Length: 495
Image 1 (spheres, rainbow, N blue to C red):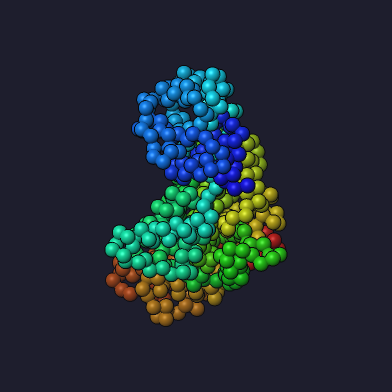
Image 2 (cartoon, rainbow, N blue to C red):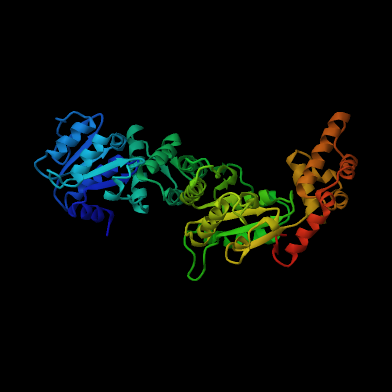
């Protein structure tokens, strides 16, 4: 059945109370107008500013009832013919016992016609006594055809407001824009489309990053997701050849919308490794490799002292990420967010969080590619590591000699220094056991030394800083060696 048929069936069945949570009031009213073509009823709309008006006639009738809630319900109860009453933002007045009683009398048909009352608001919370009597109706989100029609309508509006100047439209970019608007209400989609069109009179590929940012700001009302504006390219990351090739092989399937028959779309990877070896940069480069937005889930903001709030926060964050699809969802240092899952010291919250996350990972159908990074494998729950949770588990090891030389070149070049002026091979040998982050900090320290001595940076200064640095592979040798030994037979090398 269609959305309109479902609504008409509820009215025809004499449903006493329908609740619709949406910011799109105009669409709700229009939907009820069209439903009258299938089942006749008198249709009324109420708001605290306009009062009660009949709106199914050729012209809207003026309100003859005071706009307060009690008087309105009395008028509905005294109506001589049954009707549908769309009440906008009426739910705050249900906090009064007298208003609840009046509403219950109407719903129970006590001395009145079998009316259908409709409560419409962005979020409608009912008193416990009324919730069992209500039917919650969810509006369908606009499909591709509706969104394409919306884009054409707003383009026409732009032309009208700018003396007939037409919007320049790139067909391929417009298709991507429409695809990325899926999951939004018509009101929210219209707001974004108008912004994209009216800012420059164009719809082209340059609008896609702006669309992703606007969509994120619109959906991330909980604040548990962070939009990473600066994703990286694979060329910005040294090494990790296997991981890069793995992503490239799956890019077309992930971004194309539909996987070929028998081929499941990629769902995610777990990046284990030594601290400072580039897991965070690889997470950013995966988003860049797919060409989609990157959002980071901050587990620390999910936890709440009130019962059930932590799990609800996780559900909201994951739901928001699905509405942002296609995207990469990055959970950094996931073992810290799931700490305590082995016991009940936190009242079982971590167990429930892990359970919901695992269920979501297994059952989601949206194009959200999960990238989780971890440093301490011994703190990860076994359920997360079993085959099928992630498509692959990659191990990001300490860089080899060739990769260290490449890291030196990347960081020198990013600081406007010519790598050719340095002996990269000798520096790479001297930096044996260093992570990428440690190499970067050695360059920074050497630059400070060069600035203090009023001399250019050279191999000698870099060599001195390398000799004065004790890398993590030395400071925490036992732990690093144990991690590398564990990963050797259990994971796929990223490089």
